[in-house]
Image 1 (spheres, rainbow, N blue to C red):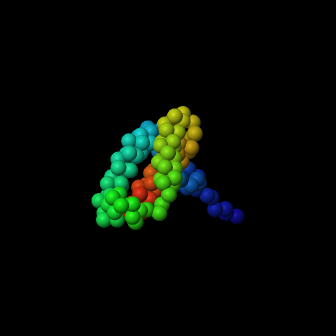
Image 2 (cartoon, rainbow, N blue to C red):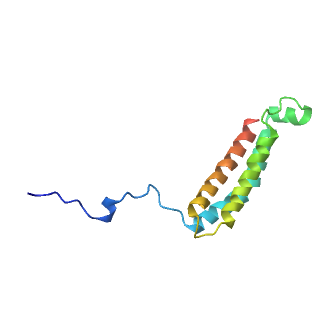
Length: 121
């Protein structure tokens, strides 16, 4: 009686992750980049909004202004800043997945903030 043997190579017996884990340095650089680009993102988005006819009417006459509440914009701004700082102060070797999640959420809230500002144009 013959039995089929399974390959015992490690790459066949275990599933590899779909993406390699980011190093602690890469997470730190990503978080710092997000914090550095937060204010320029907001400024550029507002300049683009004010440069439109609708944005100018809102600024000059208070007409046709955005219906997006200012609280949502501030919440996205402070959430992005807080998540960036959180990713920086977490220990580098422990809680790598929490740091990764914080950086991803930081960038998501920052991009959402820019999109909300531009959507009000």
